[in-house]
Amino acid sequence: TLSNKGFEVAANLKLLNFKKLQWEVGLTAGHYKNQLLTLPEGDILTSVYGGTVLSRVGQSAGVFYGWKTDGVFKNQAEADAANLSVLNINGTYSKFAAGDVKFVDNKVDGVINDDDRQIIGDPNPSIYGSFNSKLSFMKFTLNALFNYSYGNDVYNYLRSQLESGETLSNQSSVMLSRWRAEDQVTNQPKAVFGDPMGNARFSDRWIEDGSFLRLKTVSLSYAL
Image (cartoon, rainbow, N blue to C red; front, side, top):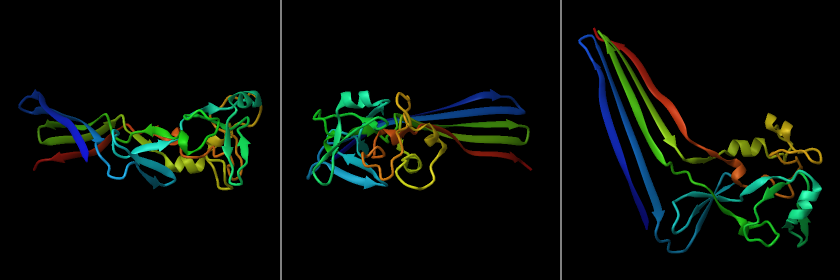
């Protein structure tokens, strides 16, 4: 069961109204809030391009679900103080070291695993809409339509591949600022083939503000 509530408003205004010159503008704005009320079999986790989308009672539908981060360990002393590790397939533990990502230990057990995942983004916008302008001079008319969205998060899959540092594939220029020496302060972790510590896992590193303002159409016409 899904509850979806919201509103939309629209306004039109004629700013100029002369014989040879007219100018009209319009604005629309909308907001909605959806919430899952019941799920017959509990949480639903859906994998999408290496990311995870969560459907959970009490939350909006389709929120991003992964790990939260707090920068990069600048030196070994800082990593030792955090005392975080991952569980390997063979049952042993590997500790995070200098240059690794600082993942938030949500469960507070010293091990970074699936139990530490949290909601890290919401693709639903806080407000969305459009505005238009119609300017007429004699027989010429200039129309423009813009649309916008504010407050929605997006998952940048392409960046997660070009800044992972885990393969031999080409990477973006951001990798030039990766961690390479003790006490280096950066938000880009070290590059390690295979990524044994999971620095490139689905986290808020790849979640970005998806707000935009876009010129959708523009036309200039002349009436014969």
